[in-house]
Length: 156
Image (cartoon, rainbow, N blue to C red; front, top):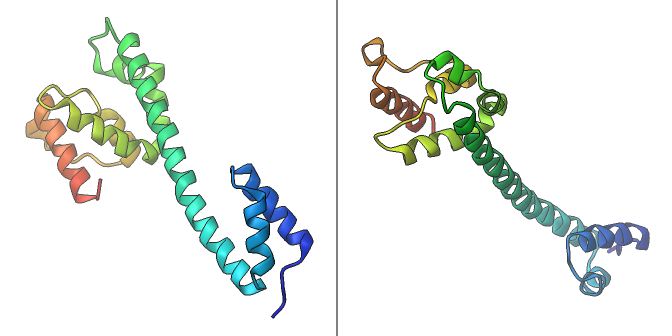
């Protein structure tokens, strides 16, 4: 069995240190590990770190989404036209988030209950679909239900 080299472990230790782990603990573990064990350990760490990083990204996107909703409500305060509502800069930014915005939009729609906002334009632009039957046009509750049914069918 070959032990891992000092150069390799130093960069690994530095990488772990940047993430707040104690270097001394890593050095003890490092000295006792074989190359294979070390590689496996790194893969496990990278997988776990990837999950944490993904959660952090999700939280950042959620915060951005919430900020954009607040801005949109301010921007559209005196607007009654749907096309003008959908052209507010913050609404356009939400659309610009693309598919990453979908879970947040659907969660927002669920929280709005029987007073749904105008998410259908953004959803159609992002997904390229329109699950709303023509008979429901003009009824915001039926529009929201159609989109929430679509979300459920597509795993959101």
